[in-house]
Length: 346
Image 1: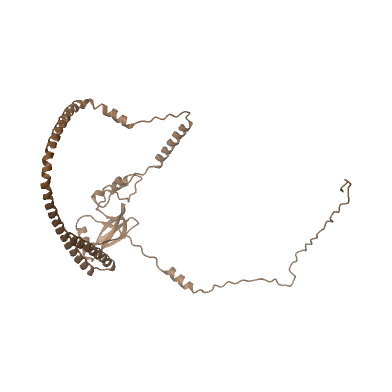
Image 2 (image 1 turned 180 degrees about the vertical axis):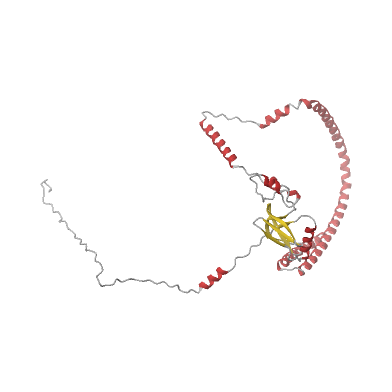
């Protein structure tokens, strides 16, 4: 439309059409071979292949495990102790297992049944070279029990259905008897846990559904006083006697205080004499301290000499380093003691 409202001539763009022609799929021409592409993969030799194969062929590292061998008291135990002290264990001393837990221990042609049990706690194994310094090697959690060596305590463990048959109930020493029962808390059954959870849920639901909640604060001290009230009538006579004794004791103390006040004047006169005696005591105390310091210096010098001898006979570098550190500390302490002694002697 133009400005006056009359319809005018409007130019409409002419539509354009695109034609797409799809040709038929042509088959292979007769008498002509199709081309095929073949891909052949060849493994390229790598210099690292030899290194990888060598790593794979390396044996796995051995794992060191320590066990405790418990033998019955008697000739067998003493004989094995002698072998260990001499460090000459014969070839007939062997240990073989039938399964993971049971086996036999043979010594001097005799075969003894052996059971592998789990100890209630972990025990550290240590070694020493000079019977002074100890080094931890491993943690021990199992023990081999030879037949006749404290196998009686295993009977109660095997009676129940839930007990493991190879869990040893005791430790190695008498104070650790029944350690597994006394030291560790018993496991709750799944049924008991579920019942407790249900009861807690029930109480929470009842609390949420309650229209009015009243809280009562209870003082436990009042209950204790009420419980003690029944016994007060029984000891009333004793309380009256004790009160009379207490009054008499107070009177005696007051009389003693009066006597002490009278004696204070006499004590003031004796103070001058005590000061003179204190000076003499200080001199004697100083001489005693000097003698004590001299004795300590002598002991430190002797300790340094001992550590120097140990340093010369130390079997490895670790012990030598420890002895050197100890000697240095002793020398520092010696210098401090000597300086203090010089100050006292001035």
